[in-house]
Image (tube, rainbow, N blue to C red; front, side, top):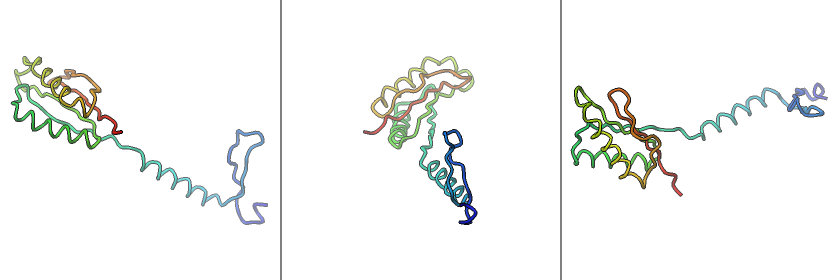
Length: 135
């Protein structure tokens, strides 16, 4: 029947009993399938990670300035990676860095939730904050 119509006999689901076949143009079927996959891929959400960098002795004004940016990033739906960078001997102020990050987490509580608590990795203390879903 497929040869008479100038089309292809395509096996749709080989595991079904009996196997399901359909008469169609196979090239057109592949094209439509690729088009569908591309549309699904474009609709998938892409995770954006924004970074904010602090020093262990960041002043209040600088902290407030960076906090405003962090709020904007979280409201836009981006994840936030806040970190304190320790230069040279400033690594002795680990506690100050941790206090700074925890303060940031507390201030941004209504915009996002902490995904990873402050953790020291080399010369950086890193914390991740994920945005809260808008209802």
